Length: 231
Image (cartoon, rainbow, N blue to C red; front, side, top):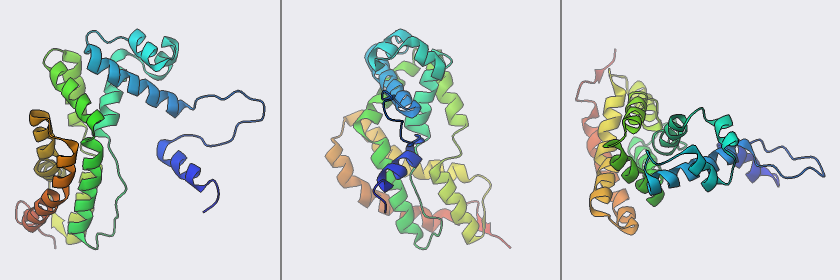
């Protein structure tokens, strides 16, 4: 790998342009960096103030950016928080193998990678804030509903689609099975963490054995319910 190989890989993952600036030019924050800083600030404001009290002014203050910059990247307060919820909770992606040579191990590893992201303390704090705000804010309810309806194209559903295609199954609603598996694994630990404020170390210890067991059960029964061998 070249000396800058790591930088290239990071840029590909974040969408940043890694081209070097000309000599003598003042350092400028990349657009993706500004975006992430704004989203971090929006998450903090939501948790500290609630959605109604949140404002573009407060987000600008927390992000140390001008309100004009915020509006250049997000059309409105609702658009900003829609993007926050989508990017931090719904559009979570991790690399996965399309070969599926060892389905149980591969699916377990995929769920573990997702769980390590979604069950992080900062993500859980955002979820708690959204649960609280959803009772009071029509905007938050609309955001969550729109994302839930459009949340079928995710890494777990993609893996299952590859799997059923390889196995020759005919499945009308792969996303439904993805939601079931998510509930058996990550969703279950999310509920326990939200209800009992479980320690992160406990969650980490429980993830692999619980996920391995859930995956074995899921794959064993997957071809039996609404899935028949294709001709």
